[in-house]
Amino acid sequence: MEGDKIKISIVKPKITKPKVKSKDKPKIKPEGKSKGKPEGKSKKKVENISKRKSKKKIGSKSQLRHDLVSGDWVVIAGSRNRRPFDPGKFKPAWTEEEIEKQSGDKCLFCEPEKSGQKKDVLIYKTIDDDWSLRIFPNKYPAFERPKGGPIAEYNEGPYYWMDSVGYHELVVTRDHDEDLSELDPLKVAEVLDAYQTRYLDLMTKKSINYINIFYNHGPAAGSSIYHPHSQLAAIPVISPYIRLELDGAERYFRSKKNCVYCVMLEHELEQKKRIVFQNDDFVVFCPFASRSAFEMWVTPREHRPYFERSVDAEKVSGGEALREALRRLNKVLGNPAYNFYLHTSPCDGKDYRYYHWHIEILPKTSIWAGFELSTGIEISTMEPEEAAKRLRNV
Ligand SMILES: [Zn+2]
Ligand SMILES: [Zn+2]
Ligand SMILES: [Zn+2]
Image 1 (tube, rainbow, N blue to C red):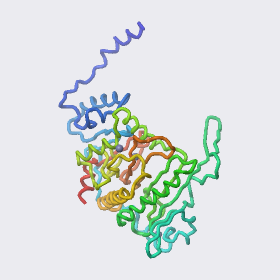
Image 2 (tube, protein in one colour):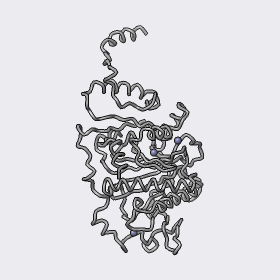
Image 3 (tube, rainbow, N blue to C red):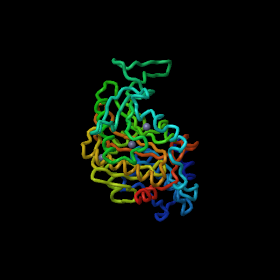
Image 4 (cartoon, rainbow, N blue to C red):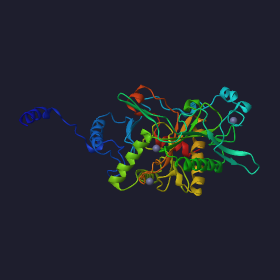
């Protein structure tokens, strides 16, 4: 339209784009030719940010890093801007007082049958007839067992909800004081085997579309019971975090005809600077866009969309890799609080061949304050390259 044209010709001269000399361009760019660049709308934004960034004082250490899968941003804040993260001053996950409070006969999980826990759904025995691992339903489940039939759904005006049905189980290892970082690697493989055994059963349940497997270590990470245990929550819905990863992986697969996780792994193995540990089947590394200091991913080396299809050899090397990651984390940070969780394809019967399962380990090295809560952008005060170096060398 005529009016619009006039408007544009008046406004246009005012928008003077900053000239960017090639030597001023930020050094950290998404890797590869174009594979790391966000697509669509956000691509434009990155270019704008890059141009603004080039005007910054030379030597600024802060970076806004882009997560290749989810599209999220994180800030890796250099020490000039914030107090640097000091691993030596980190508080352990459990205080002496708390350990004492839950010791020996006061423990709810040392002898679960005596402390009124529900009946085991799975138990692993040793040759001398002791148990080494058991799984039983959570006494206080967030998801209640379905009673059969379709899930009840409700409406109230514009609102919608349904019954919170599902299966919420606890995976408990025998030793009261030895967590996964201290167990024999084969025992950690047994834990992975137990996850898989329950997974294969729960995925056949009609109302279940996703199975969350997670581990909380220390009260700061949400654990109230000292005795080491993981949890399984089999639920009807696919969580927004998983959805974000699935969508990101699918988008990447469609445009580049490759798995985004495989591409990342290949790059990491080539670069080496963020690698923490590797064996025949698994690679442990600190992700490029780490959300917190010392974040690690334990990832199958080959393309594997479905955790539940792992073979024995993969569980053995996966157990070793997970145990190594946790052992190194404990060593460097002095037994910190952390969460780890397994991300795998949903079990809703759809095709997820573009996804690549992995375990994410997130130590509680920072708290979500106003900035993080309002933006979803986390600020880490240690570069993943530096964290990986420290984790590699212990
Ligand atoms: Zn115990
Ligand atoms: Zn892959
Ligand atoms: Zn993930």
